[in-house]
Image (cartoon, rainbow, N blue to C red; front, side, top):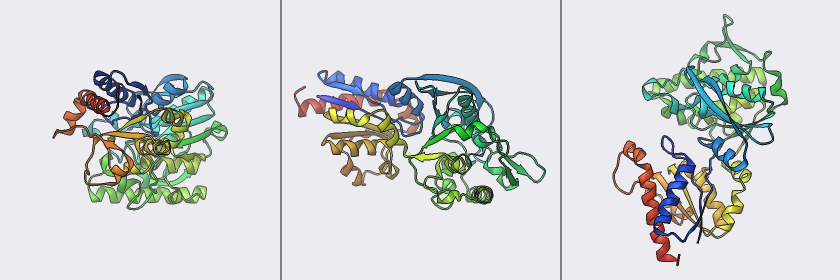
Length: 381
């Protein structure tokens, strides 16, 4: 039996390759006759750089930059073999995972460090940027990145506020693009983005994603929403582009919107784009069973997340799909059963989130063991 293991990463826990390896070890411990291929996947979020370098080749570069609170941080990015295409994950420099829970401050958090990585890629001769947006700490509408590239967001005294995060937007009175790095005009930026949320409103960047970044109270959210509206109005006045009409403008605290408005960045569906790049459809067509995995399984999983996309492709080829979610909060939702042939949640007994993160390796190995036993019952291996 040919098995393809194609998981997404578990946030705060394991990357996609580690997950695939632990599942493989578990399966082979009880079903040693299986032929297993690993094809870890990403959707533009955590692990995207690793996945593309593993599949396409290329080089990894490290760069001293800043984290979301402007503290020194060593981050990395990749360059593909063509030496012209850089793969940059916003989370590498500006991710929320690098900020301790007690220090998270979405009013100050900035994407400036990611802008430094983009400049480094330009220095190395890149003319194509693939930017993954997952795991951001900020709601700065990309002003940090734009500031690193030379755009100034000025207050009435002429001070650049572009690196201070969304909490300072109300101070900004005008935008100066005259010092934008001229190399950007020759650079094609693709943003890998699977969310469709607008910039503003109840489904926008603040009210949908602000809580996970530390915007807890209604007052905090209302203040940040007002600030984002203010930068939206200034951007519309300066560029003529209405960021709120862009599908996916709310991704990564509005970063996609800012880069679209000022740099002409193109938004592409992250999962679909990566699936095509690594030729995952061909691998799915050659397997008998596909096993995928996701950190948290909820309604968002059915709207562009990697396991759902993999399941859709598998169904085109008449393949069976098993999904292993680390968190599965709604066991009553039958829509998941319409997509996947088997769902095996982790853990299988009551356990705190922290405990499950600490024991994720063992839980995955156990899941692999049980799946191997099931495969032996249903097919001679």
